[in-house]
Amino acid sequence: MPKSASAPLLRGLAPVAGPGTRLLLLGSFPSEASLAAGRYYAHPRNQFWPLLSELFGVDLRALPYEARLRELERLGLGIWDVYAACEREGSLDSSIRQARPNALAELVGGLPELQGIAHNGGESARSLRITRGLAPRVWRLPSSSPANASWSFERKVAAWREVFEACGLV
Image (tube, rainbow, N blue to C red; front, top):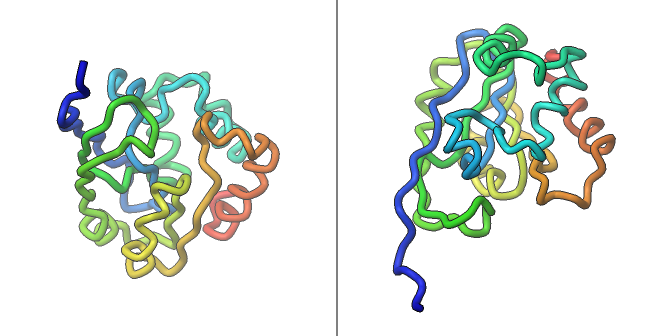
């Protein structure tokens, strides 16, 4: 049976950021699990929430999702994705097609305390050419995705800690 010409257009999630955001962490596009749940980093094997819990010393995983988001805002961390919509079958970044960018400049314009932008993984970092003009400092972090098995959890924590420290979050 031939593969369909195109996958359905998927739409991402709204940004989590406020005027006190000092670091904006950008993923590529939500996984199937995240889209189904309507929550960032909903796949149980994604290390996003464990990484942040380790960095902030707060078990964010134990909090209801909305409380997690409030805590991130209180701590100065914003989250969003570089793509607003795309076609994709499955959850792999390599399957993203016809990506439509989010309005990053518009969001960043409303973040007066922003000290930096960090890209969560390689696909997100493809937008470095755009984000370098939006914030004083921009970093590429190792992906929190379970597909990034070449980095140990401890090594990811160390890399993420450097960025979070540079922005005064930890």
